[in-house]
Length: 566
Image 1 (tube, rainbow, N blue to C red):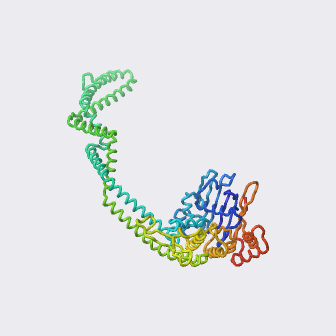
Image 2: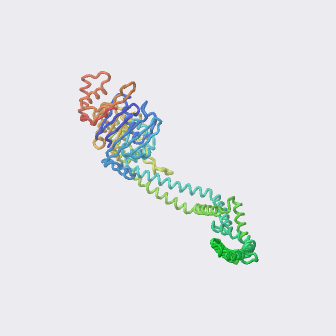
Image 3: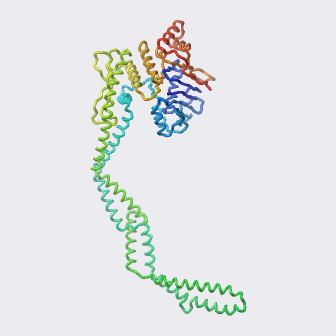
């Protein structure tokens, strides 16, 4: 249930806070006073499209806050829990801010959300029937949507649509496979040949590095061997070996050290040098012993490196990147191997079709039952709306081929007079009949609505007299189990409400602003009299207004407090 609506700098509203109660509430006032603006503000808080024109002239931004109680909205409470957006126990606060540039942000219980999320939640909280909604009855999609809502099948409709799309995607994939089979087969053959050609010679990155290192060593083996031998000769084994020279110097200095102990440090350095030279000579001899000339191995490595380099040049990659290219070809080849399995795709498409048909048949069953109940209920309502003897039916016509929304087309049929065969609404209903029929359907469908708050925005336009009284009673009856709001110009409808609000337009500081006043019993008589009487309100008009309020059982205290304008 909607418990409060805060509106700031929205169109011609500067600052209002409205607090609501259960039951049937009407909003009345002169044309252009801003009644529908309040509905537009609520719509914005529920996720409607934002526009810079909604920001009051001279203001930086419009700010709308709607507060709900969730005791009678379990679906909304479950949605909030599923999206980790639950707020205080049993409450939900929606906020929408629109800046002067038209950009908006949405907040649920203090946390930012997308507008799509806000809209999805809003549909679980409020059901709004617009004043031009009767025109939607001319469209097949709107008729189907109304029937599905009455059947409580909107969730199943989404499931049917999703399964249909999955089935169609599989069918399109199969068609593309069959259409492009030769091209895909050619690509597979080419990739298989490339994988085989490159896979024969392509090394791993570690192998490539090892091959290059081995090639360098084998290609220069003779020079390496010669250099190692020359080093050993120069260090320890030649006539002029470094080791022998150091030994001679050391012997002479050792004899002199008897005369000057300061030479002992030099002798220690020469000892260390002698040890290092000896170790270096030993290491060179070991290195030389491991070296060998292996022309066969060298030739093999040169062939391998040349093969890799040639293929890399052919496929325009660096030799070290050839392995990555090979992996890509193998992955694509695996994809093509799956794609070319037409039989598997056929089986998948068949399974998806079966799943769709099972869901669609369940939906057909719900629609058939709902079509009968909706037809009976709307026909009964028509008898009270100046369409005595009229009949309303919902026809379900098989579709071939089937569609995303199911196995049948939904069509509303109506006979406005007795003895006339029902025919499509779009062909036989006049403007007045269409408006009355729409109201009957909306009130009947709303009885089964899962949301607890219903808003009717001047849906009673184009009717009057006794029919208006019937409309008022319908809305009053809905108000016994739902929270119902209605914007109306009809005193007969306003008189049946439990609560009445008057919207007025004023000039303030050179600007036009809209205000809302909660009417007590006396003020309601005056407002109903104004709606009845024209320019001058007489005692007779007031008496008539009082009688209407009494007969409409609409007397009652204020439904809340309109916030003081800031």
